[in-house]
Image 1 (cartoon, rainbow, N blue to C red):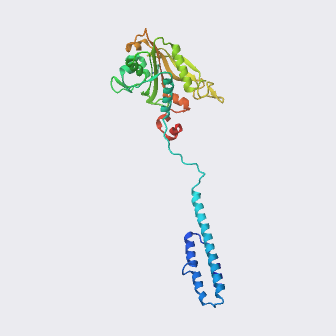
Image 2: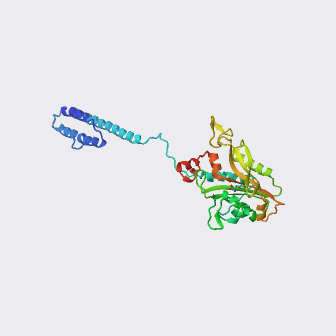
Image 3: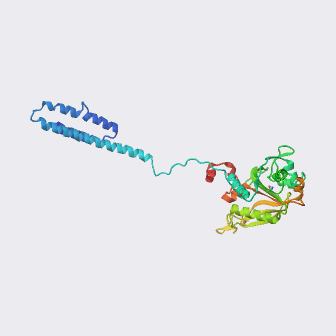
Amino acid sequence: MEGLDSLVRDCEGRGQACSLKELDEIRIEFLGRKGKLAQSMSLLGKLDNSDKPAAGKKANEVKTFITDLLDKWQAGLLAAEKSQTLERFDPTMPGRKPWAGSLHPVTLVMDEICEVLTGLGFEHAAGPEVENDWHNFEALNIPPEHPARDMQDTLYVSDKIVLRTHTSGMQIRSMLGRKPPLAIIAPGKVYRRDSDLTHTPMFHQIEGLLVDTNVSMADLRGTLTVFVRQLFGQGTEVRFRPSFFPFTEPSAEVDISCVMCGGKGEIHGETCRVCKGTGWVEILGCGMIDPNVFKSVGYDSELYTGFAFGLGVERVAMLKYGIGDLRMFFENDVRFLEQFA
Ligand code: PHE
């Protein structure tokens, strides 16, 4: 009986088992076929018959006690192990977002501009980026010795072939390929030998052209005002400033009230950095088609009139999204691009 009692104390004293493996060893040591309890039980046979029932009962109690004790430890160890794995898995952590592609901001703005203009009835037209001198310059009233060629530092492929310096060559291609009345837009890449903080050798433009009878400067103003307000918001102010382009006469540059400061020229008492305090930002060039341009495509300038406009897509994207650095568009930093998803 004493041996059985000491077995219980012995087992309780082992309460330090710190792994399930150790616990298994203890279980074998006490409850195994050749374990300590089995050994004590084997002594039962040697007792007097009168002592046997009490000793047998005691042995069973000890067995139950030790079994329960070890089960309890095991449960504790299992729980500890589980909570350790759970510590490494925090269900309250925000999940990892799967990567989603997005359209480039230039593409987004180009699509949006085209959508507004096709909504106004302009048809989409596409043409080559490698253009000949005639479409890019000559037919647009820019003869070889014309000083306007200095305005655009041209990338030449060969003597008479250039990378188009603007989308205006599409005015010529569209007029040659169609008959008035016509209204087209031509978006695409253009190239200039220019590279600094605010200029890149390649950028995007959208050309607009409308030719019909009785087209006036008022039509141009009305069309561009509606267009700009759909793009930048109905509250946008529009201003036409006299300018010069060889292929339009009269020509104008269009300013809109600054998208940053709302035309006030300052934000919280500080000069607005987008419009530099003027309250206006330039967004496109435009004008009435010069009769010399009609002459180069064989249109009767006594019968037809028209207007054209051209705008820089990167510039519009910078204004629309408040992007301060042109280079962002070309670096393709994913942290920048993924914001447009
Ligand atoms: N092609 C001109 C430029 O690149 C813009 C323009 C287009 C101006 C059509 C008037 C008419 O600056």
